Every structure is written in C-alpha cells, then in structure tokens.
Amino acid sequence: MPVDEPHRVVCRLDEILEAQGMTLAALAEAVGVTVVNLSVLKNNRAKAVRFSTLTAICEALDCQIGDILVLEG
Image (cartoon, rainbow, N blue to C red):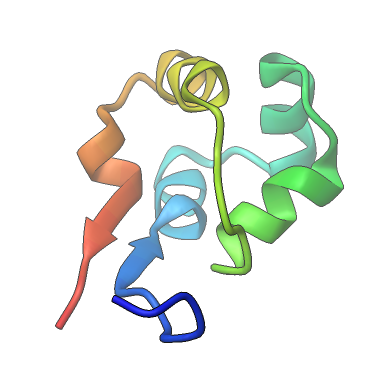
C-alpha cells in the first residue's frame, strides 16, 4: 500500500470508554500519556502507536487490542 493511501485501521476507543463510563482524561492519567495523544488515537489521526501504550490502555480498560483497533472494509 502506498504511503499516501488511507489505512483501514479504525480505533474504537471512544466506544469502549463510553461503555465503561470512563473519560479520556481518566484514561490518560491511568495510562500515563497526554489527553492530546489519546485524542489523536481516538479520532483515527494516529500514524503509529507504541506497544507499551496499547498494553497500558488494554490493562486500564480490561480489554484486548482487537477491542480497540479493528480493520474495516
């Protein structure tokens, strides 16, 4: 896939946060990253994400990576 083509990976973080009644600010504090960085991920603007960040998010939300990131289309 050429670099400038859009990817099909979609972040479902907003859905998981809503289902668990957690705010993005609370998740940011639990994970140890900024709200801005999580917002970039949540709004599907991230170009990359660290495995350590994904691990921390999954631990904080008691979920799996596949619950957060899905391949659409």
